[in-house]
Image (cartoon, rainbow, N blue to C red; front, top):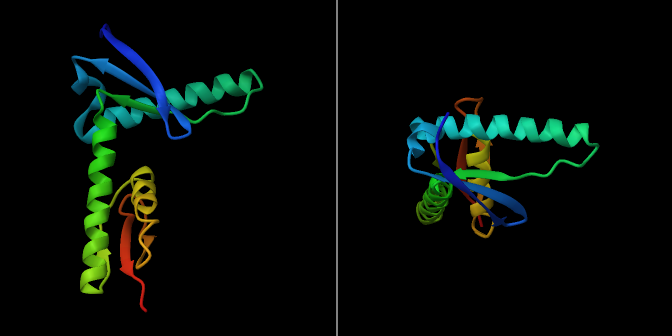
Length: 137
């Protein structure tokens, strides 16, 4: 691809994160992160094959480009928290937009500390979404 950049490695929770720093980030990120998701999928498949070939356990990792994924994940956590506040205040379910399994996992994880709400994934892919519901007391 003849793209120059740097790769940084650091811990993100319990898994390593590789962050690629490049000028031409749009090429690897794509519209709404579509290229980044595809690139991430390909790299994980390549890594899985290498781990299997060397009889090693799979090591989960994250891939980000210029902090794009980190920023999107934070925006999603903020949306989830606003949805939880609305659900608790109005005492009614709040439906989020359809999202990927990865994004739904972020929402569920972000709201585990809210004692007065619960989350549920509903629907069929690609229209599967998270519903945030108040717990009736």
